Length: 136
Image (cartoon, rainbow, N blue to C red; front, side, top):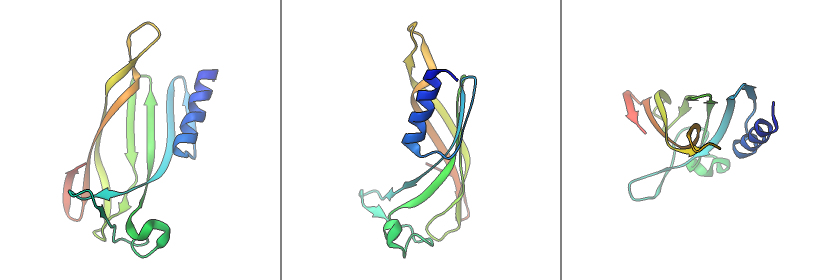
């Protein structure tokens, strides 16, 4: 692994608290976890009523929901998986469609667009509570 790869792997680990990183050539794969909060159309927090979030102060009484998955990035590839999670006591939310596209690439040292860097747009579809392909 060259020093650039080592620095990038260390930065990714620090930024998202990864549990595993596998580097092959310029392809990076890592597991990630975090928390998210849903806002309603008025900008107010929507409380997740699923166990354990709603009744537990650790999760802000439903204001924060755990999320985790895997990201593979590099050599012109990018893919994301999200593990199912309980949501509003309507059963698990399952990501069935995830598309990712670099929409504002950073230029490499020669001034060419580098598809491994830049702003990425993610579109997701979830199956939840009897509904399929809910866009996020």
